[in-house]
Length: 186
Image (cartoon, rainbow, N blue to C red; front, side, top):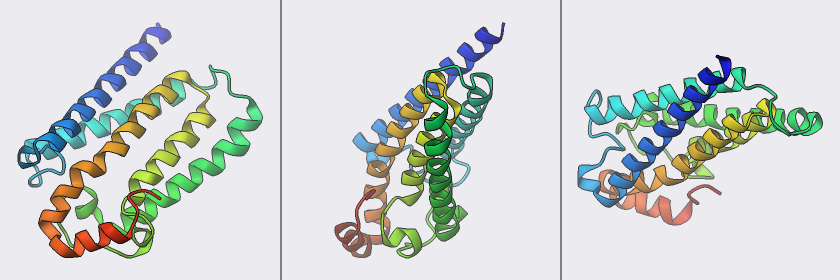
């Protein structure tokens, strides 16, 4: 019974990540009909994207608990390396959110932010999330968690490509100059 629950959560999480990737691909190919960033708050694009992300994050947490320590990563690597990586990722995400603000973080226009972690990378939250996913995958020692986190890393690798066209349109030369002088990730 528990195995069925874990497998169903895992499969749902995989499907959600593929749907997110399809939405990103659509937004890259058809930026005028983009899904991300959403055209406005509470649009179907906004609600769908954030709803899928929340379900994916909850599913990831459930998998980490339900499938805890069922894979092959040795204890020393899990905790001695995994915990510091997790903390670094969480701190970078938090710093990015605090600096950018909730409105900008949720994909809505609220001014171009170029300081804090955005001085060093154009996407500190995505970079932090990717680092966080690696750390949690190590600590949880779960194949299911590792697979869905790898998929989420792919989602976060592609997301900036959907945002950059929109950011150039919204902020013009200021964003283009920032883009020329600041790396996408590192």
